[in-house]
Image (cartoon, rainbow, N blue to C red; front, side):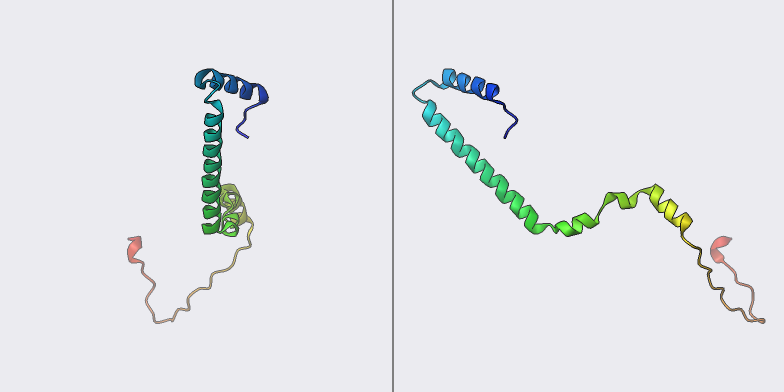
Length: 102
């Protein structure tokens, strides 16, 4: 659960027995178990609140691979060109002038 194997748990129990003493060890173990249960309850409630508030389907749509610049450029280069329609010009109208270009 916490990445502790049996030998490490035995060493922790032996140290706890030496530090706390054999008479108080059951009470300390019971209190520790209560703390672990309470912590697990808080973590579960927090996870449930996050899952409730966040739409997971919306997050799945936000795949970061879709923003890969190489893919965007490749798609832009391979998509067919669409001709842009030219604006109709009258014979007597002056030539278009772009103020921003000068």
